[in-house]
Image (cartoon, rainbow, N blue to C red; front, side, top):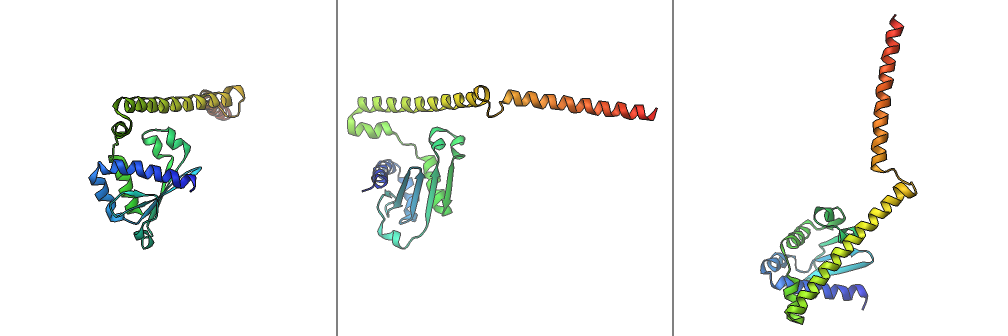
Length: 196
């Protein structure tokens, strides 16, 4: 079994636990039974099918033979580290519009409580600690990614000038406007002198 297939099974299992707590979501996915959606986030490519109960499956269902509708969600690494509307800039969705709409609406409205789901496996206190640790780890990763990006930009602008910084670019634009105004004034003076 490939790593992609194993990861898809794990994610489908976790997603199905969340979907069991949200019956409206399974009702919304039921009409799309047998349809496939993919998540392409290099280096992994995950395939999921929707089963007749409106749950996710990492294995092709019997109805999938007759249904050809599919959706591919392409994620970049930036999508994993960005938040809110910035994340949407790094996600590309292709395929069947009805299935994409159903998945998108479900993703927006479903708010899983991972701590509660985890508490059933490891207990309340351990689940709370694990949830805090994961949240802090993600915040730390985001912070580190932002710092690395800022350092790379600073290096590219000031240390090894490969690109022009905002302040230098604005100063260049200001000087350019002043020079243009001076040239216009000079040309008007020349015109006045030619008339005399």
